[in-house]
Length: 102
Image (cartoon, rainbow, N blue to C red; front, side, top):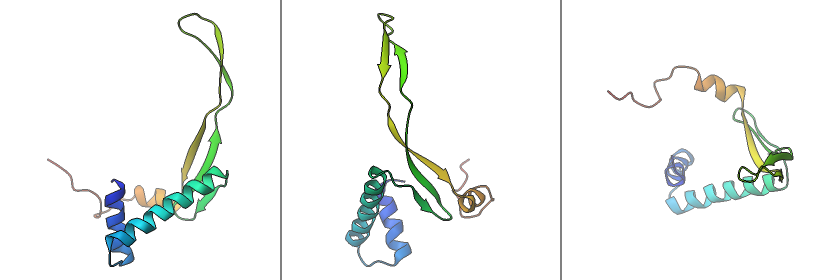
């Protein structure tokens, strides 16, 4: 699902009159999420899961061409831990899922 499809689903579920309003709300949600993660805040959505910014450890590697040791800079990434309610829902057979193809 791409952002446009998500906005269409958002519009349907929120009973919004226009796609423009739906796109604006989805964009606002995404920007707010980014802003909170940039501030290193942990976002907990009960029933959905937790978004948390993490950082890899500083490592030493080797240049494959020269064999010379190289210090690798730590990288930041987002970790998402699925909540129990969502995990249970995903692991319960449902008729609402995708149709099986032949």
